[in-house]
Amino acid sequence: MTRIVSGIKPTGSLTLGNLIGAIKRFVRLQEDMEDTEFFLFIADLHALTSRQIPHKLRKHTLDVAAMYLAAGLDPEKTTLFIQSEVKEHAELGYLLQSNTYMGELERMTQYKDKSSKQNQNIISSLFTYPALMAADILLYDADYVPVGDDQKQHLELTRDIAERFNHYYHDFFKIPEPIIPKVGARIMDLQNPTKKMSKSEDSDKGCITLFDNEKQIRKKVRSAVTDSYRKIAYDPVKQPGIANLLNIYAGIREEKIETILDMYEDKTYKDLKEDLAEVIVAELLPLQERYHKLIKSDTLQDILDKGREYAQNIAFKKVRKAKRKVGLGRK
Ligand code: ATP
Ligand code: LTN
Image (tube, rainbow, N blue to C red; front, side, top):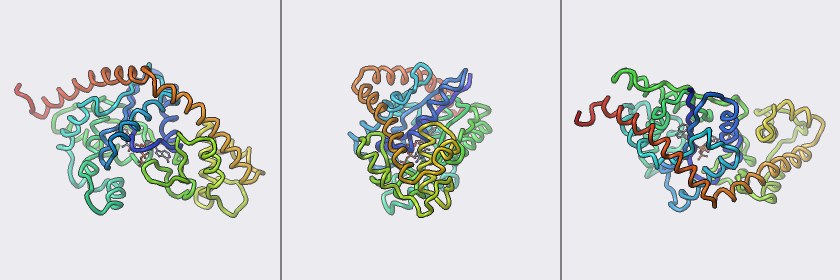
């Protein structure tokens, strides 16, 4: 049986970028792959690598879970759980941190980017974060890990840590493979299409969240930055704004860029924007309706309880063995 593991940080309101780049992809994988067990967790421990407001973190954690379910995640196929509720993540995280070198962590570009934006009081878990991420994956003997290309380096480090551990303590961890989407899967900020659409950076006008109402969506799409070529073509370098709109269109419809291009070859930017706003509204309004039903329901709580129990059972055994391997414990 193949195992797929992935996580998402509850650091802010989910965006269209998360929906297209992560949520829909995961749901699609779950539908397409047979004989596969899926684990998806809300990475709330990872959220603590930057300062969080407690009640917001709690809300975002449940929001992410409800949104995945609203988007079609099947709890019969996927074990959905909250990372901090399975304490073995933190425990194995420490064991792996004790098998990771400073030099390796210093090379992580996400750490370099994020820490360079803060000049003081950088939280130390931002630095050690990749060791915890390695634990998230290695705990479950994952075969594959679907992530965005920004996580590729963390996945490579996970493999290195696992290989090192296997070398010192004899074969123990499965070496996971990343599943990284093809180019075009990165959704950019509507106001600044060379920067990724992000929930933790505050760019209100350029970022469509999954909670935006119809009016907000239409306004943001209408004011998206384009160019003066007046020709709808897919060229992320020369026409990043238009390429981004096409990516969003194709991403939501789960179609090829060429299919969308064929439809808009002779049309104006205004036509494309109007139709795209329609496509987004048609996707998000029903999603929001399902989300609102779920967030209040016992179903969500039951699914998370069941997910925690199932994950815990596997994680407990793996950590018990890992501790023995490194020489912890009395016998
Ligand atoms: P942040 O915006 O806080 O840096 P993030 O959204 O990149 O965080 P996660 O919440 O962990 O970080 O992301 C979850 C998933 O969503 C990842 O697989 C990531 O690659 C994907 N994702 C995030 N933003 C985008 C985007 N703009 N386009 C495509 N995929 C995205
Ligand atoms: N680091 C990831 C979120 C994440 C993750 C994981 C993804 C934490 N643990 C394990 C895959 C597997 C991010 O920031 N997108």
